[in-house]
Image 1 (cartoon, rainbow, N blue to C red):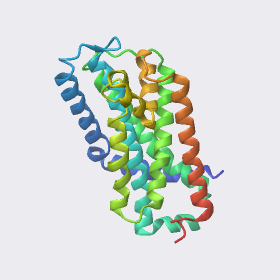
Image 2: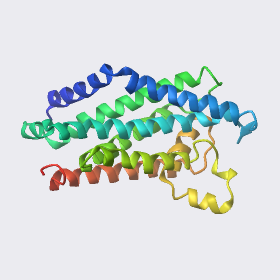
Image 3: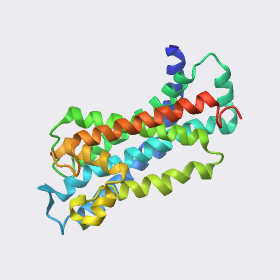
Image 4: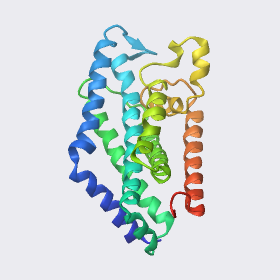
Length: 253
């Protein structure tokens, strides 16, 4: 494996983030903190606790997931789409760099950025509420798996998108509603039975539930099911990425 090529792509993508810290890091952190302050203060003053956890602390895992999912998808999709747009991606494909090395470089950089943002939000939230992380290793594992999985999804979106409008379509119309309806700010046990059943078809619910369990040992679905859902989603993204490069769909045209 050409580690130098992977490192070169990774460094290039990370350097782009460091050149725009306000847009890449500070803006999503401030947005999430505002969510936390508004929802935690406005709703938290009326809800003492959810499943034994103070409301302000209860929504922290959901807010971290909200930011991590959006940043993973947007960082990876823009990271691969822009070289396609200006034509430099085709120069990369003609270089002695394998498809796997290209994916690792771009997805690794996007996952690193969203992981850093997630950890910054976690530290920031600890200044507002008393956080308890019952299983820190599992917490980090869930976070890394989510960053890599959704960075892969963003990479796929960047490959198949024909213009900037399509690039924003899936994050705005699919990812954001799924996150908001996936238990970011509530437990699905607070919903009517029919809506609880509907919520079980939302894949993001399993990510948030597993991640919240690593904090407070409370979850809407079993932890094993959450892990299986993340692993299944990662496997599906890997399979689609492999198919895209194998067939050259939207890559060689």
